[in-house]
Picture 1 (cartoon, rainbow, N blue to C red):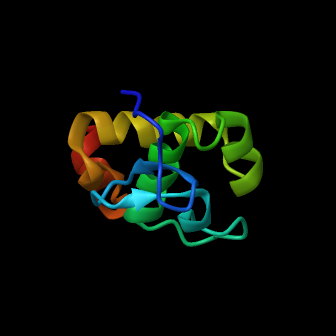
Picture 2 (cartoon, rainbow, N blue to C red; picture 1 turned 30 degrees about the vertical axis):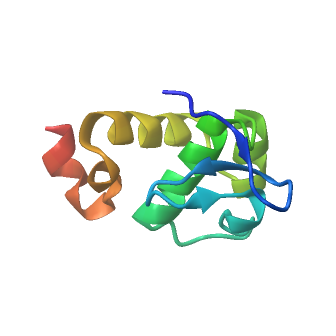
Length: 94
């Protein structure tokens, strides 16, 4: 599901993030992120889907694999943000 890119009052591109708020490049998790909570994963997926980052840029910036990113997208599409919970992975993948 692609999201439409928009411009905020400062002329920055944004998409609607997973919590319903505007998400700009400045709002994304830092490149050195090593603790991937649900919200951060969902923000990266929203940024790629909205065109703020290319998938290649996201993979390089965050040091994640294409398979990992794809799994995040599938989890969101199937179960929403709660599908990204690592502690519930067995429940959702069964």
